[in-house]
Length: 396
Image (cartoon, rainbow, N blue to C red):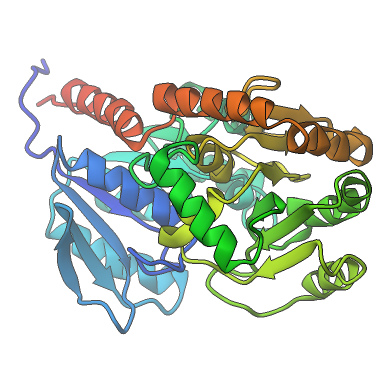
């Protein structure tokens, strides 16, 4: 007969994908999310983050209470083996794998007594060409729990692998509200005015896009909309912050097409190459309107929350998890992907011409973030889940 006992360890080990170092100002959003979540989770349990070694980083260090262990990265296979060696000395109660389902069966086999958690950030690594449905099913079978960042992603995964449906839970992401502060506050107004002066945009109405310059982000639709916008609002300026690749200014054919389109509006479009995430708050605050014209299956869209936390109204497409973040008519506007040519310029102009409406929707966004989308709240939900699982599995 099995009886309850105290678990030997409540240590959480987080396995990052290995694509980028962590912490890093030039990583993907996955590493940013891991870092911010870990810094909150460590208040309730020991946390060790495993990642790839960069030349400028030590093999081990402690930051904000979180312990980081780093290993060499050559291939995914060699990386996960190196990670596994690190885990053996840590005796974790929980092994959390972020966005790499293929790592899970390997680690589950070697550490059968630890709780195995898979955290998914997007659809990228649960679809072809990365993985087949049959392989994905095997990987999900190895997980005790699968955490996703939106109900959209939950439904998407349940449809792909119905046998795993009972394991999937939604945990929303957060934003650092101490960094992404209101543009309407005295501090925000000062920051906004300084940045606008530096950009020579003191008297312009600014539309901001932040993200990777890839087709599914829909930047080409935004440039097309700008032609209509500037006819009605000549002071409008579109600032595009980002590049095709994380941490790189390398151009692609698509980026060159965007630049070519922008040349027809030379005084109304400005490209800002990759900006480190820690510098992003001051950029977001310069905006009158923040636009997210994605046409892909965005699982969540962290930039929407960052804009809302800054008091900037968001105009976004009604796709994926974005519609769980932005409230249409309350914190911004959601537009139909099939009507983007008509609705995008209309909603942007509606906001540009009405500062009172901008402030109303912006302040609604701040309240929504405070209620639903802070890293503290995200960590509390995660910690409660893990604590419950540790108790339930503490059997002899």
